[in-house]
Length: 166
Ligand SMILES: CC(C)(COP(=O)(O)OP(=O)(O)OC[C@H]1O[C@@H](n2cnc3c(N)ncnc32)[C@H](O)[C@@H]1OP(=O)(O)O)[C@@H](O)C(=O)NCCC(=O)NCCS
Image 1 (cartoon, rainbow, N blue to C red):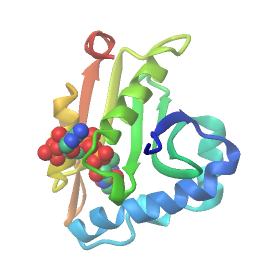
Image 2: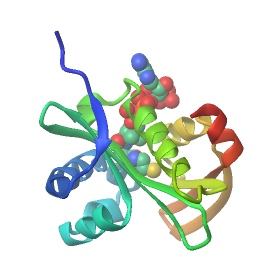
Image 3: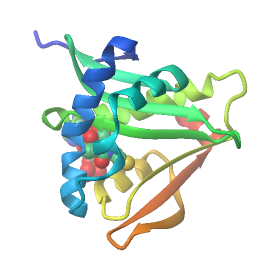
Image 4: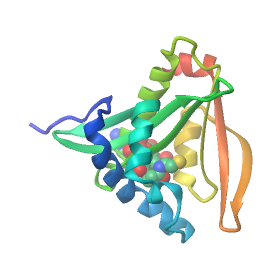
């Protein structure tokens, strides 16, 4: 019988495994933009350790291995933010990214003061990511030019909708 993938809250001990997975998963994004200096590839272990203290961080595990991760937090404006969704290239295309995103939506929805809106972003060329987010009910709200090579597309979904699909 094959092992199943479980989603849980990351612990401090997961920091290095998450960073390794992030470096691996975001290579495809770096290639897409011809830019290996994108934030997910330059993040330090210290910065990730701070995120583990301050934000919700979920991991998907297959046995001892971390094969997926996502971060979430409520920002100063009360907006639920989701980022750094990544799945091991070997495990992509089987619904794990969707499961991680849904799990983070539920976690943010369970905050003492739940956000009224959820926001995430991706690069303008990342069409598969845009499809994934749109399929889960996110709609494009803004485009921000980061560099001549890269624009960030923000997508949002209101609380009502994520409560209904959670
Ligand atoms: C984005 C990312 C996390 C998605 O993870 P994933 O596990 O592949 O996501 P899913 O499997 O839920 O969805 C991906 C595709 O698989 C399909 N799929 C989902 N479940 C499936 C199943 N059981 N069988 C076959 N296909 C399935 C989905 O329909 C989707 O298809 P589409 O690309 O045609 O829209 C992953 O590709 C990744 O790590 N990318 C690099 C980092 C990155 O870009 N992160 C996002 C930054 S904003």
